[in-house]
Amino acid sequence: MEDFKKISDELKRILSLKSYPVAVSFCRSMDELTKGKLPTEKLTFCQMVKLASQGKWKLSCPEDYMGCFTAQMIFGFRAPNEKDLKHHMMQFTDNEEIANKIIAVKPKLKLSEIKGILVGPLEDFEPDFVILILDSAQALVIIEAYGSITGEDFSFRNGTSSALCSYGVVVSYQTNKPNLSVPCVGAKRYGLFQDTELAFILPWESTKKIYQSLLELERTSRVHLPIVNGFLSPTIPVNYILKKEN
Image (cartoon, rainbow, N blue to C red; front, side, top):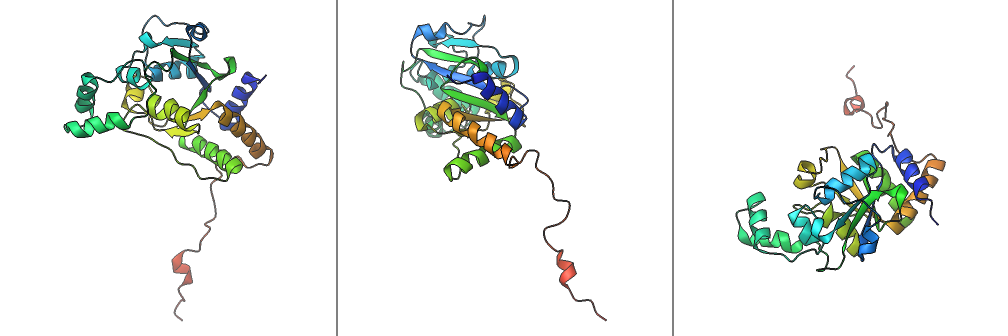
């Protein structure tokens, strides 16, 4: 059995994370949702992620308890309707065709594919996904760790909105690959994500591989965090190559 607390603690330590790694599970039965607490108020997905990262809250969200209207559609808790179009036109564009395209391209779960979502600290349970809230320097280390085990470059997918739900866990679910997300206006407004914060979403199997890669990078002094600045210029200033007149 995996030592979830050890993995969580080591990720936080090696990456110098300010908050705790977050575990997310897509629940196919109501029994799975009994593992978390139901909040007294309906919350957005990004709010649940932030609460788990800051306070280690373990929260359950059945399909009828999602506080974000758009996320209800993204997670397959309801079908798209006319209100989605009005909402996206109010937020982003006066062009109805463009608004419909924004909605259509968002990665979504099938209707009633899951019964709900469990969100909590990684140290507490085995997840489908891990979300790390980090800055660009910390994200760079994850990208380097990914490259050191795959030899691949890293591409990420983002959209106009729905950054933690659609372009977060749903993208990783559909591709079975990590994704780096720039928090959307909703995540900043309601989830209180700061301008310096990004979200790295890792499928659980990817998390374990990247965790082992980070341990090896640390053992061999290859974790570039913090990055040591160059005190001497790697290039000679162009004026130095001009021959001085006698």
